[in-house]
Amino acid sequence: MEKLNTLFKSITLVWILAYSILTNNLISGEETQSECDSKQLEELTMLKTEMSQFKEIIENQQTEINSLQNKIKALQHKPTAFLAEITNSISGSSFRVYFQNVKLNLGNAYIPHHGLFIAPVNGTYLFSVSACSKAGRYITLSIVAKNIAAGHLLAGCSSITDCNSKDFLLWLQAGDDVYIRHSGEGDYLFANSKYGYPTFSGVLVHAD
Image (spheres, rainbow, N blue to C red):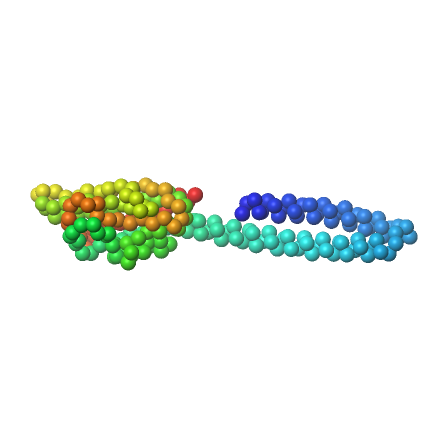
């Protein structure tokens, strides 16, 4: 977009210069009409009109480019943040965690019925995951980005209900998805809706 903007500016300067030269020639021609035939004057007048029309077209295109640039900047700086919880405990293995109790979803990048966050723009994102398990049991979770486990979280204790949380800083491209799944070890993810855990949250830290 910047290259296109620069191109139109260059074209505008060329047309303005040409317009100035031809206008001076036209004025000179008008001062010495006896030395110029009517055909030449007519051609210069037509060219002057055409150049004015081209100048107007270029200015309109420049206005459209500026408008598009402003819209793109607005989209890139749109707040993106979410926070979601689960309300029911899960037992078993090889499951995805669907955090369906959404507390915050600025930008609507988190899709609760898929348990999925989709990056709206290229940039650096900060995610946080918390997990709990009952006494004598444990759970391991993975944060998955672009179908690859980007980090892991362990929660569990032999004698008490145990909770743990971890932050993950990831660089994502627009359209990349992020979700939480069971890592393959442990079998009980304990939920407590009264205190609001486990949770999955994320925020756009910096858009590229």
